[in-house]
Image (cartoon, rainbow, N blue to C red):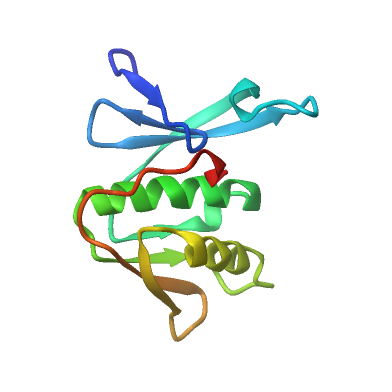
Length: 139
C-alpha cells in the first residue's frame, strides 16, 4: 500500500486511493459527548479493497458501517456511470434491509428502489450525471 495517496472524504470512514479502487476502513470510534464529528478519534483495525461493480454484498459489514459503505459505494457507482445497482443485504431479520431502505429514501442520487424477488437484495435506480455532494450529516 505504500506509494498510494489517500484522502478522507467528509461523509464517513472511507478512503479513496489515487488508483481506481477505493478502500473502506474497519474503524472504531471513540466518543466523548458532546463532540463535533470532525474531532472523532479513529482507531484503524484494518483496510480492505472493495471493487466497484454493479452490485455490492453488505454481508461482511456491521450494521453501524452500512450507511457509510452505501454512501461511498453509490458515489463511486454514479461516477463510473452505473444506472442501476443491486445492494445485497440478505433476508435475515431485516436489520440491514431497514437501514438500506431508510437511507435510500433520503439519498439525492436515488430515483427509485425496489426489493428483489427473494427480498435478500434491493435494486436501486440512480440518477445520471455527476455524483451529488454529500452533506456533513450523511453519517
